[in-house]
Image 1 (tube, one colour):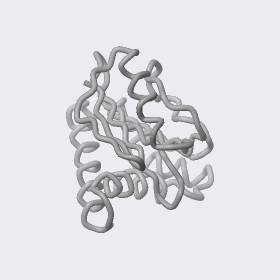
Image 2: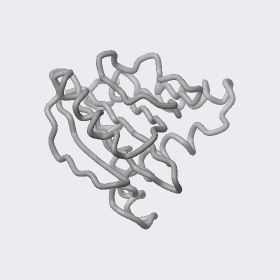
Image 3: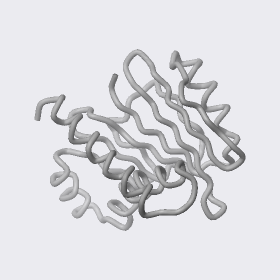
Length: 166
């Protein structure tokens, strides 16, 4: 599949998740985005999947790589600093179209450390917003764009990284 078509498909899926997330949930727009895209897109697809079903899902998704075993997908780009914490799962789109990493962290205030680490690695921040329980920012580098969202829901704080090639 050509890279442009693959990116269009990934973008369409993310957009659909955003629309569903903002229309089906209540709460802040950031909560809706995180719950809609990552919660539905990663948790519901991968939760409780055994290895045979995982292989089938990866085939159906056109080579997408799914991870729920505490590891990031093997194709996740090196050089993107991630917050420390328990890796809940991730996904890698086919042909390097994009990646997702979801990490349980201690508190939403960790965003400032994540921002500093990304900026220290050469990324430029934009569209940054944060409060006591959530944060969001876009970080543009030479090779990748990283959208980082942190949200606290029911006492659990997660950081979700969505990485796409520039």
